[in-house]
Image (cartoon, rainbow, N blue to C red; front, side, top):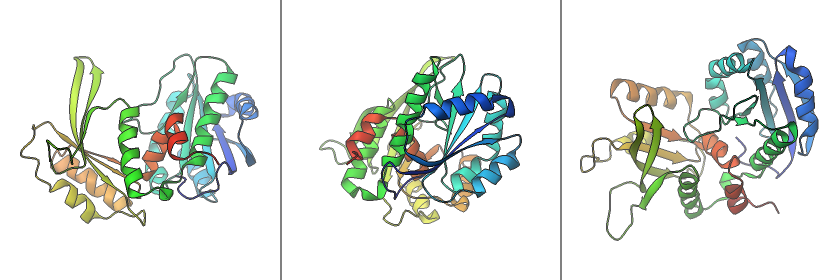
Length: 282
């Protein structure tokens, strides 16, 4: 996660791939339009290969592009899933890129921000270049509390949340910062979810279990029983907090979704209009 950085200065770009796809990786790297001091191709075969790469990160301005095709998608996806904890813990920028037949897109609730394109290499590299440059522009700590609240709302709008209402409306006061809805399409057709959203700007980018307890102890008895709770923060959550949240979800069946600083940067970088509005390149 790039929170404090010199804009548009990428120290190191690492493109990972299977051995059989090295030529494709070199081609993609050659088409990218980003300013980078060093670019490397790394072959991966096991979770340990990814761990070795993660361990070599030298700072915030390192980005991993995990190349996969239709043939290698299952393998690379599994390797990334096995390393999700370390990626979150260290807030690493990892961008899977699918060069395949299907454009799978990237949604609000996706674990990793996946770039895919069914067109040619120029289109895919242009899309990836914009996302990388978007990451390099993001500096959450440069925002005021007011700007961060507006950003949180605009992120929700950009990812198709609707009926967004602030808690300080003249007509409603529901104890959270925002109320909104989200529609999912599945086997049963469109299903609407109602969300209560708490926005927390952490000046030291660190969150505690007490913050989470404060969030879930708020009175929701006045609302529909299917309302879910979301936390949007620039803060970094430790592995202890993530374990605590997972335990709450499992034992208490608590519908809570957390968008921390790492995830928030992912969401913003994929929306060029958000980057330009809140982190314009000077």
